[in-house]
Amino acid sequence: MSTKRGKTQFSLPERLRKARLDRDLSQQELAGYAGVHANQISRYEKGLSQPTAEKLHRMAEALEVSADFLMNGETTNAARANLEDQELLKLFQKAGELTPENKTMLKRFVNMLLNQQKIDEMATSRTG
Image (cartoon, rainbow, N blue to C red; front, side):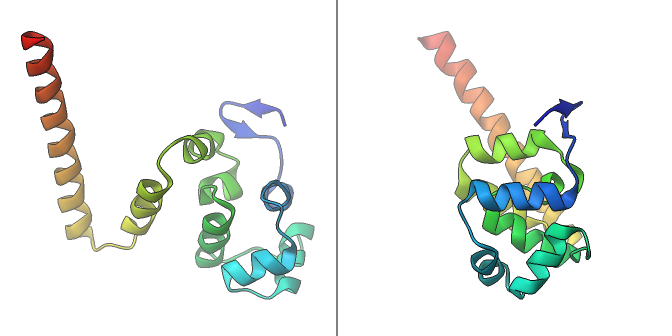
């Protein structure tokens, strides 16, 4: 799989099929996890149909890749998803469903935690 600027050269059908096979899932199994009919997975993989955003998200979740990877071939997030805390990644994916006000609050909270960690690290390096 060659990449160009963090993108794969494959199309959505090819990326979907490859991600499914990489997880050793049949079309039927992926369909069950994503809540779609197996025939629809086949249509997506043949390029005969395009998934809705909701179905794309559910398939990405089942395949443990980002929806950006499936749709656009963005490999940066796909690589990160394989390397980092899966529970945290799933929580942040779910955070996309929050209201704009709650998203703002979550961003502020995460920034606060990151800043506190920097302060703690600086204090430890000065005393250590």
